Image 1 (tube, one colour):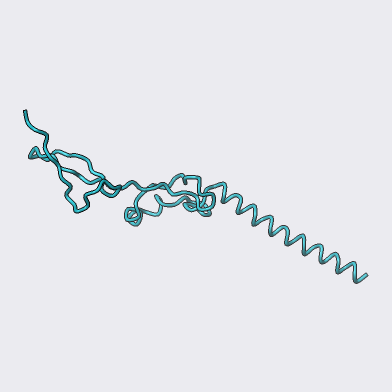
Image 2 (tube, helix red, strand yellow):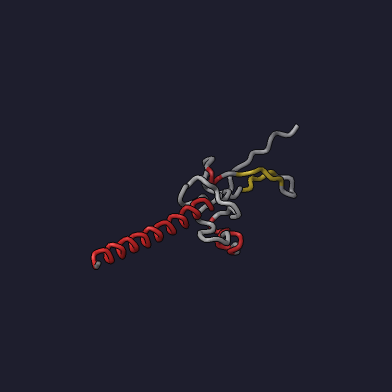
Length: 118
């Protein structure tokens, strides 16, 4: 009857924090050792509504993101990879309505000018 083998951290940090998560692994020599787990990448969220997790973007840590190709980090759309589809739509509609409003103001001014000149 063998006693359970003691395990020790391999780095200096001795607290059970998120950056110090480990799993137990058996070496070819039969020893048990700790292997450090990588932190999980967060799924990017919409910058406007802050609630929607963006689709089509690979969740990864910053260093991994720098190594990944552009295809994995964005969506081919205006504000792709930064804003959700609903927020992009509201932005486009808002911009369109503002432009329409400017045109209406211009037309009204022109009508007033023509009424004064008569």
